[in-house]
Length: 343
Image 1 (cartoon, rainbow, N blue to C red):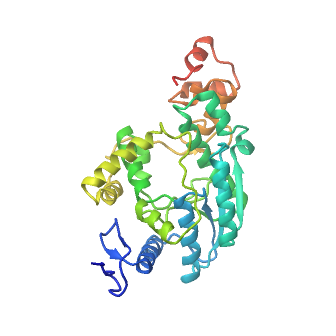
Image 2 (spheres, rainbow, N blue to C red; image 1 turned 120 degrees about the vertical axis):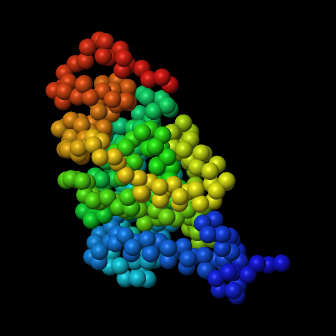
């Protein structure tokens, strides 16, 4: 027997929400999903009228749904925002070049301006070139660091007031797990924040309107709305540490459906014991970007690549920072330790 929509009690239910278990028709699901994102935005006071907001667009399901919903809510509730798309071209042949074509179609579909910044343009390296030097074991470290800074640089070029990212509830829960497993207290304290304040010159505040949206529901929304998005996984990510956290989270969710939101709430309420020394944010002595060390991670990684010493940016090598700043050569012993990565 057909199941009736538990919201309107008129139409036939087309799906069962993974988040709540309610059986809904398409229209009621769309409304519920959009209203939840709206309530998240309002409750956290994410935007102010007149602001220019950059939407981090990769062409994937999360950023495509984010762009669609942000445009829709901006018009429905008169947020008074000027929206723009901002994309990063990491230089991954057969992956990013295809996904950027999707972003360009989204630009036409939503009528929003688009800015694309590339690793090649900003750093002189593409991810294809980086992987040739460092291998597949640690390449995500390079990409993550460079991508974050590239988004900031692109946002400064666009002169936006804030950046919206497509991080969803699954992403946030995975990050909490990763930081617990790594014992990364500094990141654990801030990884559940729905927005970040400006941390210095050249750093634009970020926010996550989809913070409480389940990945499964984002997929359902994109599918039933027939949104144009790119669904292929990055060809360099099979060994990413996040992948193991994601698998663990999915196993937890299969046992307890509320595991994702439970982990987020745990992360939000965790506190740091008094007396624990925390990193102090400063600026990189080389590029001026925010950093808790003399050099930011991006500069250390770039120096390693340019010197043919990829291990220089992997792990902690703070004692070498002075040599990097002063452009001093490393000793043979130091070079031998940093020369080859275990691939």
